[in-house]
Length: 168
Image 1 (tube, rainbow, N blue to C red):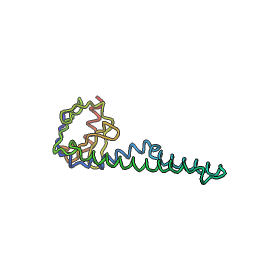
Image 2: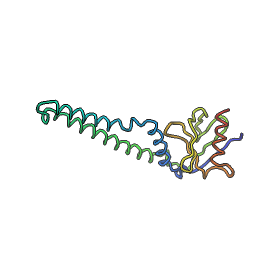
Image 3: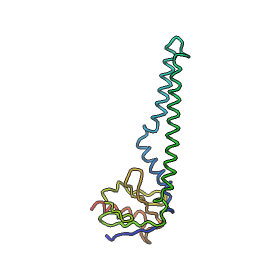
Image 4: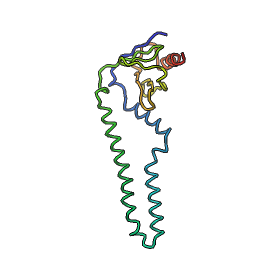
């Protein structure tokens, strides 16, 4: 099969939407982590209530537990704020604001702006939000917008061609 070359403006790709969809896939696979901090806070509340009721003078004996609960809640808020700052910084990074990206696909793999990527490194091929995404990490990939596909080559045909190259 012949090679395919795509040149497009990466700023036209809904990267944030794609990354949110990929992050949702990862979260669905790891549901326990999402509830770890709230579960720890609830367990801590249950422990402090049990300790308060078990002591003779519960309202003063367990006062040290409430700053610990405040720590859990503050830690959760700080982690959420740090994640939002990280995502904002990631979206404004210079590599995200290039005006042109070129991907070359052939039987040996992908060449993304001169960097070679073997087909073995591509985890999965997805179609999200009008874009074919070649996943190289569970939450990140190389986007190929449908608008950049040559005439006569749809997303399904592209996925089939990539599957054939990966299988070879």
